[in-house]
Image (cartoon, rainbow, N blue to C red):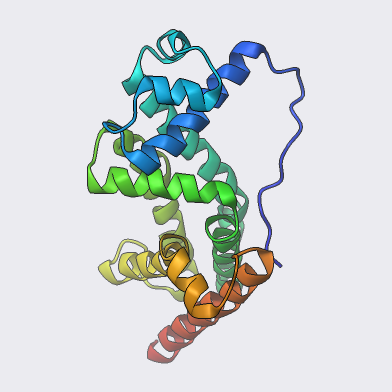
Length: 227
């Protein structure tokens, strides 16, 4: 079953200033991803957010600060998504079967967010631009998400297979597992056309999960035979 992150009701009332700040971050994430940093004006961001243009300088010190805040938003969002799937890692130590089950759970969780969540589209667009034209925002995303998540998956792989977590083969294998999921987001239009789908919702994402987990199972089985 595909599980998307649950929306949690805030425990306290959100202030108007916090709402404005959040709206500006969401607007920047969307427009920077779609048009690029240089191709987006602060006036466009303010209009998209329904805020006064002066609020960008007030909350973030300027456009560059807003880009950093958008990167931090990505880190916080993905950490929340990945946390549920990876935080149980310590419990799998010494238990290959539990580690394998955790790998399957992490892959399913990844598909549920990256493929099925509408919010993931804006995040992936933003990150792809940063990967093409790296700035300090990419450093924040790499250090906050890419590096720790990849390392945790590599450790799970070691627990599941016995292969060293930091071996070249393990690191490349984990990139392969992640990459197959990301393709269904960046190649979304091509996938829908070829599959004859009008959308990629929960039902379609479940089919992606079935195939990607089959792939994971095949890799694990091959490693077991080689061992």
